Image: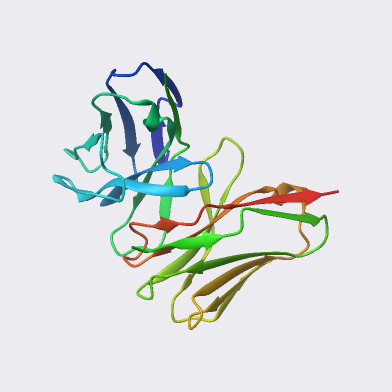
Length: 112
Length: 111
């Protein structure tokens, strides 16, 4: 099993560009989520999904869109990148009713 | 909203015990977690404790929970240089979903 796979690992964007961060899991987990990590602030929840076709906002959703068309994939879209979105992004998945979340290796995004 | 606080830095000598402390505000937390992040890597689950427990021990790791004071600690016995990392305290009120993370404690282990 690959676990949670995020692509790309690194990305540099210009202000105003759009892109999609990919996240895939092969554990048949119902629950998937996106966090961003900023220095001194820990990880903050952006969006989450409790199953295919169902998404909801977390603590810091502005500027990001998500969709969940399959159980395996949960892409995060930046429609118009801003320097404030420079961060490390982590995708996580967990089984419904489970106690552990599995994290991907992260995507380091720089917006210039 | 919920909040999780941790001190940002801790330095210990190799072989000593490390104690990383955390406080949280959400009294409805079901699980409390400790995650480890090594440089350039994702988060690795170290251990977790259910909110109705006081203590959990797992090899060199001991977790203590004071639910009344909303205080969680992680003790690492015989700290090694390989334990140098950022340690995140996190709480969840939904069984491993929608975590609220602390800012992380950077543990430095000195030879």
